[in-house]
Amino acid sequence: MFIAKREDGSYYSLLDGKPIPNSGPYFCPACDGKLQMKVGQKRRPHFAHYRADCNASTERESLYHLEGKRQLYYLLKKYGNTTMEHYVIETRQRIDVLLETKNRRYAVEFQCSTIPATLMVERTKSYFSQNLFPLWILSKKRFQNTLHQTISSFEWLYLNYPTHSTTPFFISFCPYDKKFTYIIPYFPYSQQKAFILSFSTENLYVHSFPSMKLPFYWRKRWVEYKRKWRYEYCLYNGMIALKKYSYQHYGVSLTQLPAEIGLPVPSQFFMQTPLIEWQAWLFYDCIFTVPTGSIIHLPSVVQMFERRVKEGKIKIRTLPLVERVDYTNAVRQYVEALVAIGLLSKKMENIYVKRRSINSNANMEELMKQDERFIKAISLV
Ligand SMILES: [Zn+2]
Image (cartoon, rainbow, N blue to C red):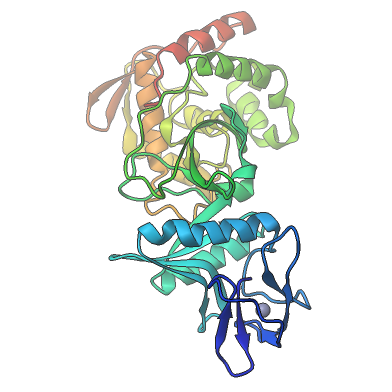
Protein backbone atom coordinates (compact mmCIF):
# COMPACT_ATOMS: atom_id res chain seq x y z
CA MET A 1 0.00 0.00 0.00
CA PHE A 2 1.06 3.59 -0.57
CA ILE A 3 -1.44 5.32 1.71
CA ALA A 4 -1.65 4.98 5.49
CA LYS A 5 -3.54 6.62 8.31
CA ARG A 6 -1.79 8.37 11.15
CA GLU A 7 -2.76 8.50 14.82
CA ASP A 8 -4.43 11.90 14.38
CA GLY A 9 -6.63 10.49 11.59
CA SER A 10 -4.78 12.24 8.76
CA TYR A 11 -3.50 10.31 5.78
CA TYR A 12 0.04 9.94 4.62
CA SER A 13 0.91 9.09 1.01
CA LEU A 14 4.22 7.70 -0.11
CA LEU A 15 3.50 9.01 -3.62
CA ASP A 16 3.54 12.68 -2.74
CA GLY A 17 7.27 12.93 -3.10
CA LYS A 18 7.59 14.30 0.44
CA PRO A 19 10.61 13.13 2.45
CA ILE A 20 9.94 9.77 4.05
CA PRO A 21 9.62 10.15 7.82
CA ASN A 22 10.70 7.33 10.03
CA SER A 23 8.20 8.11 12.70
CA GLY A 24 5.05 6.09 13.00
CA PRO A 25 2.83 4.52 13.90
CA TYR A 26 0.82 3.99 10.70
CA PHE A 27 -2.51 2.26 10.36
CA CYS A 28 -4.52 0.65 7.56
CA PRO A 29 -7.33 3.02 6.50
CA ALA A 30 -9.61 0.02 6.05
CA CYS A 31 -9.05 -2.30 9.02
CA ASP A 32 -7.08 -0.01 11.35
CA GLY A 33 -4.45 -2.72 11.60
CA LYS A 34 -0.94 -1.56 12.34
CA LEU A 35 1.28 -1.12 9.29
CA GLN A 36 5.02 -1.21 8.82
CA MET A 37 6.78 0.99 6.33
CA LYS A 38 9.05 -0.98 4.04
CA VAL A 39 11.92 0.80 2.44
CA GLY A 40 14.15 -1.56 0.55
CA GLN A 41 16.55 -1.76 -2.37
CA LYS A 42 14.24 -3.60 -4.74
CA ARG A 43 10.78 -2.35 -4.00
CA ARG A 44 9.52 1.16 -3.94
CA PRO A 45 8.73 2.29 -0.34
CA HIS A 46 5.35 0.96 0.69
CA PHE A 47 3.27 -0.02 3.69
CA ALA A 48 2.45 -3.57 4.67
CA HIS A 49 0.29 -5.12 7.37
CA TYR A 50 2.02 -6.81 10.27
CA ARG A 51 -0.78 -9.34 10.27
CA ALA A 52 -2.11 -10.62 6.94
CA ASP A 53 -5.82 -10.69 7.83
CA CYS A 54 -7.02 -7.54 6.08
CA ASN A 55 -9.80 -8.14 3.57
CA ALA A 56 -10.07 -4.63 2.17
CA SER A 57 -8.23 -5.47 -1.05
CA THR A 58 -8.36 -8.52 -3.29
CA GLU A 59 -4.69 -8.43 -4.02
CA ARG A 60 -1.52 -9.59 -2.30
CA GLU A 61 0.93 -6.82 -2.89
CA SER A 62 3.74 -8.17 -4.99
CA LEU A 63 6.34 -5.91 -6.54
CA TYR A 64 4.54 -6.26 -9.86
CA HIS A 65 1.20 -5.28 -8.37
CA LEU A 66 2.58 -2.28 -6.46
CA GLU A 67 4.36 -1.02 -9.54
CA GLY A 68 1.29 -1.59 -11.74
CA LYS A 69 -0.97 0.27 -9.36
CA ARG A 70 1.42 3.20 -9.26
CA GLN A 71 1.73 3.34 -13.05
CA LEU A 72 -2.04 3.18 -13.47
CA TYR A 73 -2.48 6.00 -10.96
CA TYR A 74 -0.32 8.28 -13.13
CA LEU A 75 -1.30 6.95 -16.59
CA LEU A 76 -5.02 7.28 -16.03
CA LYS A 77 -4.75 10.95 -15.09
CA LYS A 78 -5.25 11.86 -18.73
CA TYR A 79 -8.84 10.56 -18.44
CA GLY A 80 -9.81 12.27 -15.19
CA ASN A 81 -9.01 12.53 -11.54
CA THR A 82 -7.27 9.52 -9.99
CA THR A 83 -7.10 8.56 -6.34
CA MET A 84 -4.70 5.94 -5.11
CA GLU A 85 -6.15 3.25 -2.84
CA HIS A 86 -9.54 4.83 -2.52
CA TYR A 87 -11.24 3.54 0.57
CA VAL A 88 -15.00 2.95 0.49
CA ILE A 89 -16.19 3.35 4.06
CA GLU A 90 -19.61 1.68 3.62
CA THR A 91 -18.17 -1.58 2.41
CA ARG A 92 -14.71 -1.40 4.01
CA GLN A 93 -13.12 -1.98 0.62
CA ARG A 94 -10.01 -0.49 -0.82
CA ILE A 95 -9.96 0.17 -4.57
CA ASP A 96 -6.53 0.11 -6.20
CA VAL A 97 -7.19 3.31 -8.13
CA LEU A 98 -10.38 5.36 -8.33
CA LEU A 99 -10.79 7.12 -11.68
CA GLU A 100 -13.35 9.90 -11.92
CA THR A 101 -14.18 11.09 -15.42
CA LYS A 102 -16.84 13.53 -16.53
CA ASN A 103 -19.45 10.81 -16.89
CA ARG A 104 -18.42 7.94 -14.73
CA ARG A 105 -16.55 6.75 -11.69
CA TYR A 106 -14.39 3.71 -12.28
CA ALA A 107 -13.06 1.31 -9.69
CA VAL A 108 -9.78 0.23 -11.27
CA GLU A 109 -8.39 -3.02 -9.94
CA PHE A 110 -5.08 -4.40 -11.11
CA GLN A 111 -5.58 -8.11 -10.51
CA CYS A 112 -2.41 -10.17 -10.55
CA SER A 113 -3.17 -13.07 -8.23
CA THR A 114 -5.97 -15.58 -8.62
CA ILE A 115 -8.84 -14.96 -6.23
CA PRO A 116 -12.00 -17.03 -5.64
CA ALA A 117 -14.73 -16.43 -8.24
CA THR A 118 -17.24 -15.56 -5.51
CA LEU A 119 -15.00 -12.78 -4.22
CA MET A 120 -14.68 -11.24 -7.69
CA VAL A 121 -18.40 -11.51 -8.36
CA GLU A 122 -19.33 -10.03 -4.97
CA ARG A 123 -16.90 -7.18 -5.34
CA THR A 124 -18.13 -6.41 -8.84
CA LYS A 125 -21.75 -6.33 -7.62
CA SER A 126 -20.79 -4.12 -4.72
CA TYR A 127 -19.10 -1.63 -7.08
CA PHE A 128 -22.09 -1.51 -9.39
CA SER A 129 -24.40 -0.95 -6.42
CA GLN A 130 -22.32 2.06 -5.41
CA ASN A 131 -22.47 3.45 -8.92
CA LEU A 132 -18.85 2.60 -9.49
CA PHE A 133 -17.98 1.04 -12.82
CA PRO A 134 -15.54 -1.81 -12.15
CA LEU A 135 -12.53 -1.97 -14.43
CA TRP A 136 -10.65 -5.16 -13.73
CA ILE A 137 -7.26 -5.16 -15.37
CA LEU A 138 -5.38 -8.42 -15.39
CA SER A 139 -1.65 -8.86 -15.19
CA LYS A 140 -0.09 -9.09 -18.64
CA LYS A 141 1.84 -12.13 -17.41
CA ARG A 142 -1.34 -14.18 -17.59
CA PHE A 143 -1.48 -14.12 -21.36
CA GLN A 144 1.06 -15.38 -23.84
CA ASN A 145 1.62 -13.84 -27.22
CA THR A 146 0.23 -16.74 -29.13
CA LEU A 147 -2.75 -17.32 -31.35
CA HIS A 148 -3.81 -20.34 -29.40
CA GLN A 149 -4.34 -19.78 -25.68
CA THR A 150 -5.55 -21.36 -22.54
CA ILE A 151 -7.98 -19.05 -20.76
CA SER A 152 -8.72 -20.31 -17.28
CA SER A 153 -12.17 -20.19 -15.71
CA PHE A 154 -10.80 -17.50 -13.38
CA GLU A 155 -9.77 -15.32 -16.32
CA TRP A 156 -13.09 -15.76 -18.11
CA LEU A 157 -14.79 -13.87 -15.28
CA TYR A 158 -12.90 -10.77 -16.36
CA LEU A 159 -14.28 -10.63 -19.88
CA ASN A 160 -15.58 -7.19 -20.83
CA TYR A 161 -18.30 -6.60 -23.37
CA PRO A 162 -19.57 -3.05 -23.04
CA THR A 163 -22.66 -2.11 -25.01
CA HIS A 164 -20.73 0.12 -27.41
CA SER A 165 -18.17 -2.53 -28.25
CA THR A 166 -18.36 -4.81 -31.26
CA THR A 167 -16.35 -7.52 -29.62
CA PRO A 168 -15.68 -8.89 -26.12
CA PHE A 169 -12.19 -8.45 -24.69
CA PHE A 170 -9.91 -8.83 -21.70
CA ILE A 171 -7.74 -5.92 -20.56
CA SER A 172 -4.26 -6.61 -19.31
CA PHE A 173 -1.50 -4.29 -18.24
CA CYS A 174 2.24 -4.47 -17.86
CA PRO A 175 3.86 -1.89 -15.54
CA TYR A 176 7.22 -2.28 -17.27
CA ASP A 177 6.21 -1.31 -20.81
CA LYS A 178 3.33 0.82 -19.46
CA LYS A 179 0.92 -0.54 -22.01
CA PHE A 180 -2.51 -2.07 -22.00
CA THR A 181 -2.98 -5.21 -24.02
CA TYR A 182 -6.45 -6.10 -25.24
CA ILE A 183 -7.10 -9.79 -25.75
CA ILE A 184 -10.01 -10.77 -27.94
CA PRO A 185 -11.16 -14.38 -27.63
CA TYR A 186 -12.27 -14.79 -31.23
CA PHE A 187 -12.95 -18.43 -31.11
CA PRO A 188 -13.10 -20.15 -27.72
CA TYR A 189 -13.97 -23.66 -28.77
CA SER A 190 -13.68 -25.52 -25.50
CA GLN A 191 -14.02 -24.55 -21.86
CA GLN A 192 -10.51 -23.15 -21.69
CA LYS A 193 -9.00 -23.15 -25.19
CA ALA A 194 -9.38 -20.25 -27.53
CA PHE A 195 -7.98 -18.68 -30.65
CA ILE A 196 -7.24 -15.10 -29.69
CA LEU A 197 -6.12 -11.85 -31.24
CA SER A 198 -4.42 -9.14 -29.22
CA PHE A 199 -2.94 -5.71 -29.55
CA SER A 200 -1.18 -3.28 -27.22
CA THR A 201 -1.73 0.41 -26.77
CA GLU A 202 -1.06 3.17 -24.26
CA ASN A 203 -4.77 3.92 -24.16
CA LEU A 204 -7.31 2.50 -21.85
CA TYR A 205 -10.68 1.47 -23.09
CA VAL A 206 -10.74 1.75 -26.82
CA HIS A 207 -14.06 2.39 -28.49
CA SER A 208 -13.33 0.69 -31.74
CA PHE A 209 -10.92 -2.08 -32.40
CA PRO A 210 -8.47 -2.14 -35.29
CA SER A 211 -9.67 -4.59 -37.89
CA MET A 212 -7.91 -7.88 -37.29
CA LYS A 213 -8.37 -11.28 -38.76
CA LEU A 214 -7.47 -14.68 -37.48
CA PRO A 215 -4.64 -16.13 -39.58
CA PHE A 216 -5.93 -18.41 -42.33
CA TYR A 217 -4.76 -21.57 -40.60
CA TRP A 218 -7.33 -21.37 -37.78
CA ARG A 219 -9.64 -23.52 -39.88
CA LYS A 220 -6.98 -26.17 -40.30
CA ARG A 221 -6.36 -26.18 -36.55
CA TRP A 222 -10.06 -26.57 -35.92
CA VAL A 223 -10.30 -29.56 -38.24
CA GLU A 224 -7.35 -31.12 -36.42
CA TYR A 225 -9.10 -30.53 -33.11
CA LYS A 226 -12.28 -32.11 -34.40
CA ARG A 227 -10.34 -35.17 -35.54
CA LYS A 228 -8.86 -35.47 -32.04
CA TRP A 229 -12.31 -35.05 -30.59
CA ARG A 230 -13.62 -37.93 -32.66
CA TYR A 231 -10.75 -40.22 -31.74
CA GLU A 232 -10.01 -39.21 -28.21
CA TYR A 233 -11.92 -36.43 -26.43
CA CYS A 234 -15.34 -37.96 -26.98
CA LEU A 235 -14.28 -40.86 -24.75
CA TYR A 236 -13.80 -38.58 -21.72
CA ASN A 237 -15.97 -39.06 -18.65
CA GLY A 238 -17.69 -35.70 -18.98
CA MET A 239 -19.19 -36.88 -22.24
CA ILE A 240 -21.17 -39.81 -20.79
CA ALA A 241 -24.63 -38.19 -20.87
CA LEU A 242 -24.23 -37.04 -24.47
CA LYS A 243 -22.71 -40.36 -25.49
CA LYS A 244 -25.67 -42.30 -24.08
CA TYR A 245 -28.19 -39.95 -25.63
CA SER A 246 -26.54 -40.03 -29.03
CA TYR A 247 -26.24 -43.80 -29.13
CA GLN A 248 -29.49 -44.87 -27.46
CA HIS A 249 -31.78 -42.45 -29.29
CA TYR A 250 -30.09 -42.07 -32.63
CA GLY A 251 -27.69 -45.02 -32.88
CA VAL A 252 -24.74 -42.71 -33.44
CA SER A 253 -21.46 -43.13 -31.57
CA LEU A 254 -19.81 -39.82 -30.71
CA THR A 255 -16.82 -40.75 -32.85
CA GLN A 256 -19.14 -40.64 -35.83
CA LEU A 257 -20.89 -37.47 -34.85
CA PRO A 258 -22.42 -35.77 -37.91
CA ALA A 259 -20.04 -33.18 -39.39
CA GLU A 260 -22.88 -30.63 -39.18
CA ILE A 261 -22.15 -30.47 -35.44
CA GLY A 262 -19.25 -28.27 -34.31
CA LEU A 263 -19.55 -25.22 -36.55
CA PRO A 264 -17.75 -22.19 -35.09
CA VAL A 265 -19.96 -19.23 -34.08
CA PRO A 266 -18.87 -15.72 -32.98
CA SER A 267 -20.89 -15.77 -29.74
CA GLN A 268 -19.31 -18.96 -28.44
CA PHE A 269 -17.74 -16.95 -25.58
CA PHE A 270 -21.12 -17.02 -23.80
CA MET A 271 -20.94 -20.80 -23.54
CA GLN A 272 -19.13 -22.72 -20.89
CA THR A 273 -20.10 -25.97 -22.60
CA PRO A 274 -17.73 -26.66 -25.49
CA LEU A 275 -18.94 -25.89 -29.00
CA ILE A 276 -19.30 -29.48 -30.19
CA GLU A 277 -21.25 -30.56 -27.12
CA TRP A 278 -23.95 -27.89 -27.01
CA GLN A 279 -24.42 -28.07 -30.75
CA ALA A 280 -24.78 -31.84 -30.52
CA TRP A 281 -27.66 -31.52 -28.00
CA LEU A 282 -29.36 -28.94 -30.15
CA PHE A 283 -28.83 -30.77 -33.41
CA TYR A 284 -30.31 -33.99 -32.07
CA ASP A 285 -33.18 -32.16 -30.41
CA CYS A 286 -34.23 -30.02 -33.34
CA ILE A 287 -32.72 -31.06 -36.64
CA PHE A 288 -31.30 -34.55 -36.97
CA THR A 289 -34.48 -36.60 -37.39
CA VAL A 290 -36.69 -33.89 -38.85
CA PRO A 291 -37.74 -34.94 -42.40
CA THR A 292 -36.30 -33.11 -45.38
CA GLY A 293 -38.52 -30.22 -46.42
CA SER A 294 -39.71 -29.53 -42.86
CA ILE A 295 -39.88 -26.07 -41.39
CA ILE A 296 -37.49 -25.22 -38.59
CA HIS A 297 -38.69 -22.39 -36.44
CA LEU A 298 -35.86 -20.51 -34.72
CA PRO A 299 -37.78 -19.54 -31.55
CA SER A 300 -38.57 -23.25 -30.98
CA VAL A 301 -34.88 -24.10 -31.35
CA VAL A 302 -34.06 -21.40 -28.80
CA GLN A 303 -36.75 -22.79 -26.48
CA MET A 304 -35.24 -26.27 -26.72
CA PHE A 305 -31.83 -24.82 -26.01
CA GLU A 306 -33.17 -23.07 -22.90
CA ARG A 307 -34.59 -26.38 -21.74
CA ARG A 308 -31.17 -28.01 -22.00
CA VAL A 309 -29.69 -25.11 -20.07
CA LYS A 310 -32.27 -25.58 -17.31
CA GLU A 311 -31.46 -29.29 -17.17
CA GLY A 312 -27.78 -28.45 -16.80
CA LYS A 313 -26.78 -30.26 -20.00
CA ILE A 314 -25.65 -26.95 -21.45
CA LYS A 315 -23.84 -24.44 -19.26
CA ILE A 316 -23.58 -20.71 -19.76
CA ARG A 317 -20.52 -18.85 -18.55
CA THR A 318 -20.67 -16.50 -15.56
CA LEU A 319 -19.65 -13.15 -17.02
CA PRO A 320 -20.13 -10.49 -14.32
CA LEU A 321 -18.80 -7.64 -16.50
CA VAL A 322 -20.87 -8.31 -19.57
CA GLU A 323 -23.72 -5.84 -19.86
CA ARG A 324 -25.84 -7.64 -22.43
CA VAL A 325 -25.90 -11.35 -21.80
CA ASP A 326 -27.52 -12.72 -24.92
CA TYR A 327 -26.32 -16.26 -25.36
CA THR A 328 -29.23 -17.13 -27.62
CA ASN A 329 -27.26 -15.25 -30.28
CA ALA A 330 -25.02 -18.29 -30.44
CA VAL A 331 -28.05 -20.45 -31.24
CA ARG A 332 -29.11 -18.15 -34.07
CA GLN A 333 -25.56 -18.11 -35.38
CA TYR A 334 -25.45 -21.90 -35.38
CA VAL A 335 -28.66 -22.07 -37.40
CA GLU A 336 -27.14 -19.54 -39.81
CA ALA A 337 -24.00 -21.69 -40.04
CA LEU A 338 -26.22 -24.63 -41.02
CA VAL A 339 -27.52 -22.42 -43.81
CA ALA A 340 -23.95 -21.62 -44.86
CA ILE A 341 -23.14 -25.32 -45.26
CA GLY A 342 -26.34 -25.95 -47.20
CA LEU A 343 -28.25 -28.09 -44.69
CA LEU A 344 -30.93 -25.46 -44.13
CA SER A 345 -32.22 -22.61 -46.19
CA LYS A 346 -33.71 -19.45 -44.81
CA LYS A 347 -37.27 -18.80 -45.89
CA MET A 348 -37.93 -15.67 -43.91
CA GLU A 349 -37.06 -14.15 -40.54
CA ASN A 350 -36.91 -17.01 -37.98
CA ILE A 351 -38.14 -19.61 -40.50
CA TYR A 352 -35.80 -22.17 -42.02
CA VAL A 353 -36.30 -25.27 -44.17
CA LYS A 354 -34.31 -28.47 -43.97
CA ARG A 355 -32.93 -29.16 -47.43
CA ARG A 356 -31.39 -32.58 -47.16
CA SER A 357 -31.09 -35.54 -44.82
CA ILE A 358 -28.06 -36.44 -42.72
CA ASN A 359 -26.00 -39.40 -43.72
CA SER A 360 -25.79 -41.29 -40.44
CA ASN A 361 -23.83 -44.19 -41.95
CA ALA A 362 -20.88 -42.11 -43.11
CA ASN A 363 -17.53 -43.65 -42.27
CA MET A 364 -14.76 -41.83 -40.46
CA GLU A 365 -12.94 -40.81 -43.61
CA GLU A 366 -16.06 -39.31 -45.17
CA LEU A 367 -16.90 -37.50 -41.95
CA MET A 368 -13.48 -35.91 -41.69
CA LYS A 369 -13.67 -34.80 -45.32
CA GLN A 370 -17.02 -33.19 -44.52
CA ASP A 371 -15.50 -31.48 -41.46
CA GLU A 372 -12.91 -29.97 -43.78
CA ARG A 373 -15.44 -28.94 -46.39
CA PHE A 374 -17.89 -27.37 -43.94
CA ILE A 375 -15.34 -25.24 -42.12
CA LYS A 376 -14.50 -23.50 -45.40
CA ALA A 377 -18.04 -22.15 -45.55
CA ILE A 378 -17.86 -20.66 -42.05
CA SER A 379 -16.82 -17.12 -41.26
CA LEU A 380 -16.38 -15.78 -37.75
CA VAL A 381 -16.69 -12.09 -38.57
ZN1 LIG B 1 -6.08 -3.45 6.49
